Length: 570
Image (cartoon, rainbow, N blue to C red; front, side):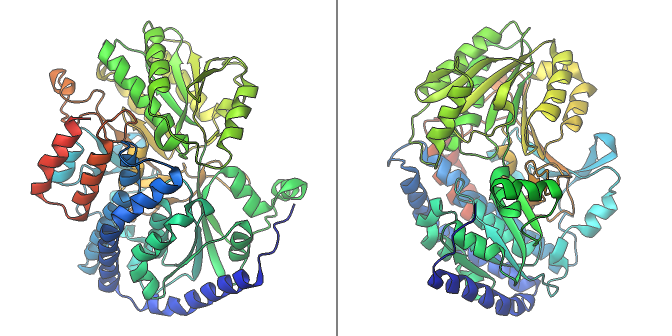
């Protein structure tokens, strides 16, 4: 199967954009650190001006009505992370301007296996208040020293004049901040000028993206294109393009790199890609949610059921890091009660249209593979998965509201060991894994818990948090666990975000509070965080998301009372 050739006028548009970028590379090379920081500040200001239009455009193609609490998802995953990323990248540029390392303002510690851990969250008093109880570390590979971390942080921004040609970003169609963040990473971490090809699903955001990226477009460093697969094919195979970065699925990656059909499969088998240009990628996979058995209160069971359902249903389930399979202990005394709350929450969570192409077909394929699955208000729950013959739910990213439950034997220690091994060996992809455990259970496991985190081969590991918190943390790294290859790409090659520009990070480890406030305080957890605004059950998510975005545009003490008041009503 071959992709049809695009019309002549679209071919001309692609060629013109690449030619303009080839000329713009010299202008980008001439931008010193101060100028690049100023451009980030201008993008930050443009994002502030476009935030309302951004959310409206996203809501239009996702068919979210005015007044829906789910609009909070669009604030928090759209303009908000672009505002925090531009601020963090600007701080890194300023540090280099002043002759410092971007990590000089961050604390460095130790992680299992002799790793250096860079503490990226909380960073500053505002983080400690707005994300109370949440933390994140970026772990470097074993053998990398703290001195090397400081010396190499900054990546290509340490050599602004040494540009690396024209790069292509194939934009995502689900989370609207991804295309802009990927463009910024190509420019600032890799020193490549960028042709951004939008996913057709997001064409309604063209004007917003052009306005947000206008400072970089004006300097000649960015061009934005629309069109289908034919335009993308023309672009990635353009002889002047030096690099391609894509977000999507492993199937899409293989189609672009090796081609489709029998010929594509043969090229992949032989290791002879159709696309010779170097490729990096952030792809999906099947994300496990490991629930470690313990003694939970009824409120804990209900809250964590909401947590799990959020990981599946946020953005309708169309997330590369959506939790797809809950891994629980068959011997957990509270298993039945937890699953009852899971069914209830899955059924009662706010309904939304299946906006992403192919969703209904993927849902039907899941039902065909698991005839005994439950349909809960257009969501599919596959309970009782056979651990010996689990079927496709562990290896097929459904990208739809499908949630599986896999039971493994054992108490906390034995179960955790088996669950880690299962996640590493039987699940497709390595983008993110979630672990939920009671604080007393974590304390009882001691070093075994730290060892489990270190053993999990995932780009982001979240403990009592969703890995999406790592996505939202601008200074954290985001991407698959390192080591994948073109012919076994799993969840991708390389990282993005990483606004302090660490060289070759291994993973991000996120931790959160087991309970929301005020219950957290009553049980001795030092966390003031109420129910997180990204929960699909949060009633004030839209208001809180808007307020958080406004705060990210201009951090100030006077904005905090309104944010706290809205969050506490969630």
